[in-house]
Image 1 (cartoon, rainbow, N blue to C red):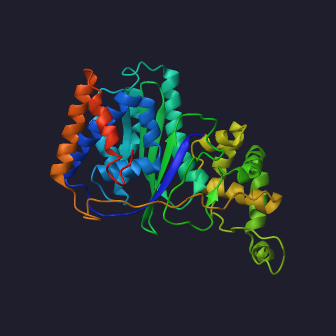
Image 2 (cartoon, rainbow, N blue to C red):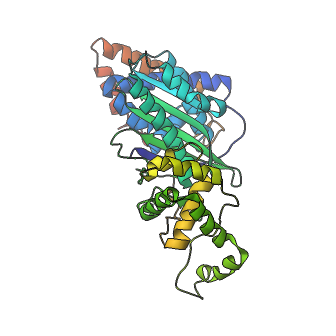
Image 3 (cartoon, one colour):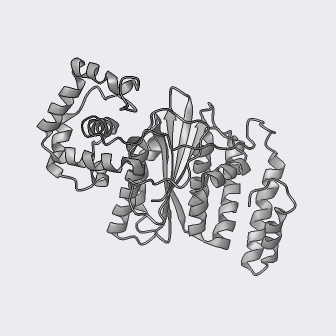
Length: 374
């Protein structure tokens, strides 16, 4: 599957000043133009889907070294830059309300890229499922508030989205790429990056959760009255007391990872799911109205009654830090930023008329500048 990474970022207040955002748009336009010209649109999507490269891009553009704004502002600058750059790449969606317009914006691009209705439907499905997985199938305490869907003229796509955890004041970024898409519910991560691990994260996309996925589908395809009976038995106080031996290893070798059950189950929704009869877990997850509580309830019933324990391990790994707009480790050099943009634009113009030596010089610069990212 094509989700390629997750980044874990602290929430910072404020917004990018106009003088900086304007320069970010110009510089991101120049960088995109060079990469697409040299390597093509597919390679640009691959780089955006790499959380480390995206983080480095944000820092090159002069934004924070590791705040949540590295996602929202950088994506906003890219979306603005690509509106006027005819390079075969379009960005849809954004932060907050803008993310809710993603599906409509995808539909409007059909004429631009000569897309059939089936391709548009597929793009919309992939956009919805990427959000559904990160908001529902993986329950890490982060609620999505930013979602962009990036499409190329080659009908490839990438997703960059971000969730917020109000308790920890941290955001977590998720990257997706369309290459080698086999499904949305079997370990879609290529790399997961963050500052900290959380306890008891339900990961229904982990290979360890395969049997729980199967039992969850079986439970949905059974009559809801049977599931409701099992749920009632598990949530009665007397039964909760007997489950104490599962929690304390001194009582028994068996131990559950979590007994944090949802307080309410939408049994009408369970009936609607039963009427559909999903054939696999992705189909179950894709059903409208299936949210975190339903997924968690099915996983816990599967574990408690049938012993098919899902993965409760947070799949996040550690990140890195670099420079930033708040003066850490130093303030943005506006003149250098403008000169860099002009140099890249000029080199690209010369390369397009046959003087590729200028671009080769740019590539060799990294050999003389310590700490640069190629």
